[in-house]
Amino acid sequence: MTKDVIALTERMPDAPSILAGLLAGGPDLRVETTGEGAVIQLCDAEGRPLVSIEAPLMLQVPGEADRLLGPGTAPSGDGPAWWIEARATTGLPGAERLAGAFAARLTMLLGGRVWPPDAPGTTGAARPVDVSGITAVPVPAAAQPAVDMLTDQAAIVLQDRPVVPMTSWLSEVLRATVESDRALQIVTPPHCRLSLATRTLLQSTPSRWVVQDERCGYYDGLTGAVLRWQDGAFVPDRGEDGETPVADAFTETARTARTEERQLVVSFRTEHRPEADLVLGGALEAAWQALTGAPPAGWGTAEPAGLTWSRRQLTDLAYRRAPEPTWTMAVGTPDRPAVATLRVERTPDGVEEDITLTLGYGPGEKPPLDALPALAGELVTRYGLKTMVCQLREARRDLTAPPRFERLPVPYAFVLGAEGVREAGRDRAGRPPLPEAPVRLGPDARPGFFYALGDGESDEGWAALETLIRHLRSAEG
Image (cartoon, rainbow, N blue to C red; front, side, top):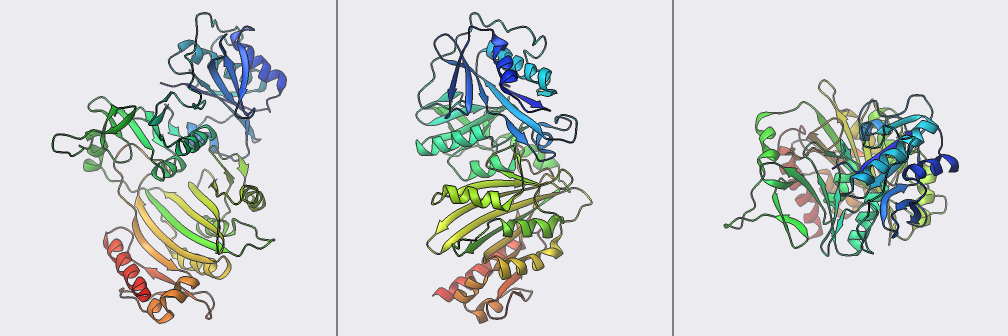
């Protein structure tokens, strides 16, 4: 199923090297552009694409290639690398050889590596690939370069990678499907995992992760529901009783294995006045510093995150996109897995940042729970914190999502900002029906409160959070 081939080069691709790569299929193929020139396509005689090639992306963040493609993938050396992704049209073996030959030629000229290393076409890449007899099928006008099948109900994307990232291609497909009232459905073999960014965006839209399974055919990689193909999309396979079975592959490991790996999930919202000198990203940087000892390593609007962390660049991007919301992600260093998603949006009251920071810990590593009250105090005092929820989860240290059952996060703490305290009433907010008294945060004139909910392991955290929210909301009545 692998149709994506990536060239990771040590030197910046220039026009001659790109041209040499494009000639991998000989001089008879046509070259077209799409996506306002961001994507080059090698096409057959009728102008139908065989291979789509994305513009080179400079990776300034150490560890990004290894995070998404596996250890040892990145080119050697301490300098930046360039990520050039080629996607072959599905169902054409010759197209896949053409993509491999393109990538191999680039790395021959510029140094670096090809992923996957055994991709068809990478051996003997100096010779043009024989493309005689290769003819692409017509492409629907609404299709994107990453789409393998487009129906009235869904855009189907086939992937076979160690980790399926939210690339700029997938991000564009997701946007297009939402606008056209379709669903994005990513189909993978069972050994694939989703990146945190991909899982987050799939769960927030009418999309689906479809996993191939030799026993039941297909199942949803996030819920385990057995699926079947119907009317142009994968849908839950309901039995005669109207219930959808759960795939054995999704639950069998959960019945036999537990893990000592943990994730700390910190979700919070801040709101700022729309002042001319406002610089975004301060709350995220403060949280990262408090929980890891360093700021984020990089950021971007898709994966891989190729830019070094910059609050000013983040602010400029959000300013250019306003009044539309801006979605970005940030990543950490290889020694401390950390990924954050950040959504910036103009509201009637100002500028809101909606942030979820997730950090991974292995056996013997303890999440820095003691740092959370001080972090909450800083966010209340300096960054206009509205609310914050801190949760612990039994899940992979590398923050990827496997196609099997994972236990839900368990609430550990909740933080109410100054405005929420004012709305609930200071006395009521300061005396909740919880075993532990809350910790007052920030200035006395406009305080927030930090509420301990449990140990982050048992379900008592959910009951405590429900009790607290009901108590705070009763003030509105």
